[in-house]
Amino acid sequence: MPSRDVPLYLQPATHPQARACAACAVREQALFGVLDADGLSRLHVAIATPAFAADEALWQAGTVGMAMYTLRSGIVRFERVTAAGDRRIVRLAGPGHLIGQETLLSAPHADDAVACTPVQACRLPRTLVDELARSEPQVVRELMRRWQAAVVAAEQWASELTAGPARRRVLSLLHQLVQLSDGDDGTWLPRREDMGAMLDLTTETASRIVSALRREGVLQALSKQHVRVDAQRLDAARHAADAG
Amino acid sequence: MPSRDVPLYLQPATHPQARACAACAVREQALFGVLDADGLSRLHVAIATPAFAADEALWQAGTVGMAMYTLRSGIVRFERVTAAGDRRIVRLAGPGHLIGQETLLSAPHADDAVACTPVQACRLPRTLVDELARSEPQVVRELMRRWQAAVVAAEQWASELTAGPARRRVLSLLHQLVQLSDGDDGTWLPRREDMGAMLDLTTETASRIVSALRREGVLQALSKQHVRVDAQRLDAARHAADAG
DNA sequence: CGAGCCGTTGAGGGGATTCAAGCTCAGTGG
DNA sequence: CCACTGAGCTTGAATCCCCTCAACGGCTCG
Image 1 (cartoon, chains in turn blue, green, purple, cyan):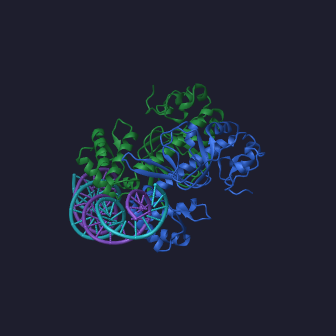
Image 2 (cartoon, rainbow over the protein chains, first blue to last red; image 1 turned 45 degrees about the vertical axis):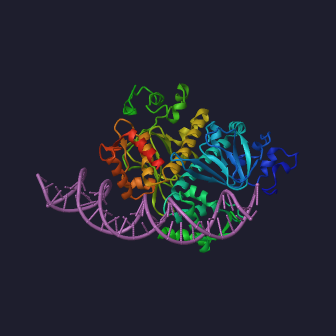
Image 3 (cartoon, rainbow over the protein chains, first blue to last red; image 1 turned 180 degrees about the vertical axis):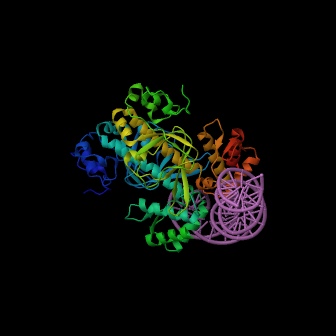
């Protein structure tokens, strides 16, 4: 079984795209995970698997995309500039997530999409998904499921990450980040300024709280942007914040 | 042309549901607005048009619905209880909006849906929409459009209504409410406690700001829960808040 | 090695909360 | 009819949390 880090183009050229998809590490969570062998056989075009560096944009708000993406690894943030003129991050997406579905409607992107970490993705052209949706009914249903998931994620973000005292918001964010982390090499931690844009805090406040959590042993720095999170203490801290 | 206030059941009995839908006041914005005469003719079942009183629930979070609704008049709020235990309102829906699409996926509702004002709605059973989606391809596309609209609305909510100083948040909410208002009899204004649940403020703070806006002439009370909004001054106030 | 970005920490001020007290108004029952 | 009640709104005073302003240190990179 190929690791998720093996680029698809290194896999035997005799294998069609269908074979590559069948072997994909995030296949179960991916859009095409609903396709059976027969459905996959219709994938007669090659799917590009572009990589994005940290802070590289996948697209910009207001533009109309030509493709959507399934994330294979890494984290992407959705950000916009509010009417008041300040930058706000409104959602995060991680491995297995489908992003940019508005492309299917030829609707412009509502936000910038920017890689937070190095990102590997599968590029799904609009035309391909269009075709597939016509021939494979399950794909339509799966698309709807994805859309619903986006709604749920956005509402969750609004309800859990934008309310209450600063400390609780940071703890909730940490909780989210742990879910999105690739697991092996710790949890990615945003720059303080980006944490501020997510939680509506100043960089100073974000910094103070992160420092406090480190002193309390909830966090442990692994590298510049990665930490080890003590799940036990995180839960305890979240529960304590809720009670008080 | 029947007004939106004429109950559907009062229309001539010889007219099938198709005729009723064709004459609907919110037809252009409604889900079935994409159907042509031929498509409408497939509507051989009667569509119920239930009314909900203010503060009456359309459904509760966690339950799986049997139908979705197109709102004909009134405003509905989506609320939930956060992990921290406090009530949060995460979205509003108004005339023309389709709500409860998760029913189509047999997914449980993520939030309570509660009428803010008296609400008139069209009840669209899951099975009906299912059928129609199969026979009329435009319906599928329209459903996707609705889902995308929900995502955009949720992100807008998160970015504009949950960030910045309290006064700006209230002004942004007012802006939203004006869009949702039926137009003729003023703009609906939530109870202070509900404003707090929307904007993450205390009822006292919400009250203070509303009082100030009334003194400044931005608002003018019409009745207990309805106000006239001076669009001019509202825009001025919003712009001033952005600059300062 | 100096420049610049990012993170950290401190001191002081301001805006929202907390606590508390009246107020209006609709509904109820004597 | 009208006091009584309770829910929602308003306003005040004190407190506290977060922001603002400021300085400093570590790190990378030209």
